[in-house]
Image 1 (spheres, helix red, strand yellow):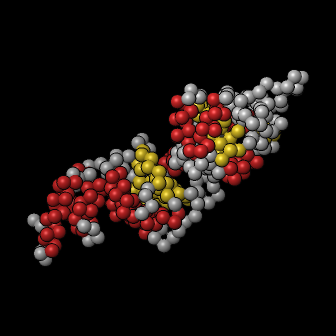
Image 2 (cartoon, rainbow, N blue to C red; image 1 turned 30 degrees about the vertical axis):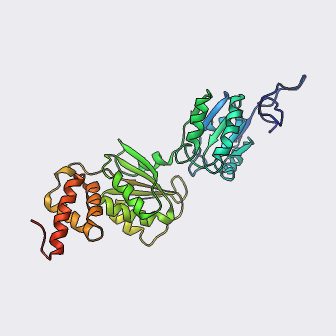
Image 3 (cartoon, rainbow, N blue to C red; image 1 turned 30 degrees about the horizontal axis):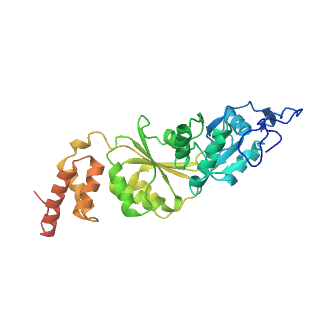
Length: 328
């Protein structure tokens, strides 16, 4: 443990705090450096401290977060290599412990033992607010069940950062995270999300963005949407258009960086869709899908009852198969 820690001396073979040896001088205050100036971090209470960190720009961190990271007995990090960059930038020497989805089950009991012994531990993700698309939720749940105090240090969030620059409604939003990687399950999930009366916020991998947008355009139709890339970084970009237009825009492009996709809510008055418009949507869907899938897609995109859409799709498909111009 760094000499700059305020924490008590510990037996290396135990997580239990030990009193300092007789006559020992008090430990120096924990420190961090910001704007070229060294600052002392105030002591923090024992427990689990959830600390939001920058999503790109290292300046997007609070003084409270810096103080907490400097004063903690250790920092639980999703990827220690990523967190080391942040700590080095601010002159913080707190020990790091890897805590991620691959070792969480093994590490959680050890972390809980240290918390119950009275340590102050900070939890960070690679970027943004922990517990959003990372394994921190289970640790918080178990910490609370063991009577450990959990404190939040609020700060950057890719979800909110993307939402406020998207140009889409912000009064209600639904965070989905990552959609399934394969097209079939992804389309099914998009259909299930289609009638939520809120802006949808999704994370996506650059290599799957084109396919995901194509599926979203097919399932949800002409909804307004935005693709936010590299937020807060040098090459930040936000493209705003309809889903079909964005799908075409990224059809032959594999962008780089972290990506958030936002999709506007179903249009108001969807229930008042004319029969002609409904038929046109069904015919378009039938050109690429089975009757069942086409009905699910159109129902999700328009808000029309699935049973009614399915019945109409059967009529239109039968008329098409008979070579007619359409059902009456």
